[in-house]
Amino acid sequence: MKLYNKLIVLVLFSTALVHAQFNKKEAIKATQNFIKEQNIPGLSVTVSHKGNNIWSEGFGYSDIENKKEVLPSSTQFRIASISKTLTALGLAKLVDNKQLGFDESLYKYVPDFPQKEYDFTIRQIAGHTAGIRHYNGREFLINNKMSIVKGLDVFKDSDLLFKPGTRFKYSTYGWNLLSVVIQNAANKDFFEFMDDEVFSPLKMNHTKLDIADEQNANRTKFYMIRKGKITTGPQVNNEFKAAGGGFLSTTEDLVLFGNEFIKPQIISNNSLSEITTSNIISDNKKTNYGIGISISKTKNNTLKLSHSGGGIGASSMLLIYPKEDITIAILTNLSRVKMRNYIKSLENIFLKKD
Image (cartoon, rainbow, N blue to C red; front, side, top):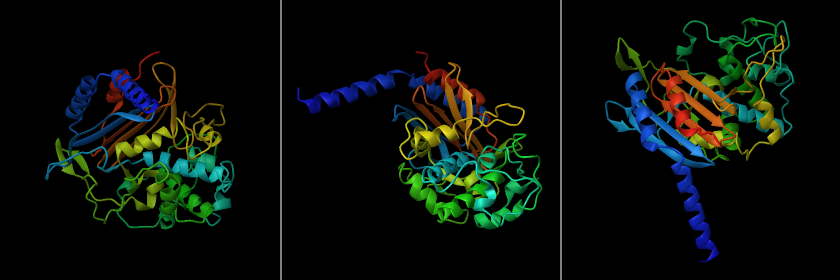
């Protein structure tokens, strides 16, 4: 047998072994039960192992009225706060290029941001320990079209909630600020930078800004449950807070992205270590959150990296298991979906002990 044919056989055999490691019927059943329990209109799930998609499937509809089916390769969902993890890779690129330092002051990059009682760093903002506030009231429903710089007006005059480095307080607005940091440090439009430096190199061809007034045939409709019935959610404009929660993507794109945390191609191992190391607050406690990503352990006591997302018509999850070389992306077009039990089901199926 020629060497070329031997290689083909080896690849096919390896792929067969990967596929044999999980029960597809069990995974589908768990997903169908989850959809039924949570009354989800449309869901996409993709699982990769060693860089290969071993399961990628759409369920239900991206558009109920027109019965448009979900396709994992092209149906774009709001990924909500997983946007923070995408942006974290942008920060890492700038660090690798020596255009940014994680421990440098915010004011080095955004000098006209109102001075606060304390100075704070890029790392503190990205790790939610800077004291920048989150949404007040119904601010998450803002539907005004604003640039990322204009969007700072929403929160820029608010006092810090605490002395930086002393507490953990989740803040999407902090990531709004980081998009301006990236724009200024790179001397390039934030969205162009993300396309050129993150999305294009990783071949994330269906990841883009959620532009509210743009026609987009691949974008799902966004649903909520009111009085027990599925209804279309209100229109919101997420452009100004893209870095913290304004990107659209597919599960297949997110798996490509997640694999960067297992075998980095566009950032250095050093930067990867920086963003996946837990921050520590002043009482010497770990926050279990690095730079745009949560850090925990699996049932097998191995590393688990993750980020969830929630917004109008969106509940999302990205799960990365470096030791197992597995990435799982789950996207839905419904608000307030409870995913914990479903994630446990998938982990029981895909994470096998050695």
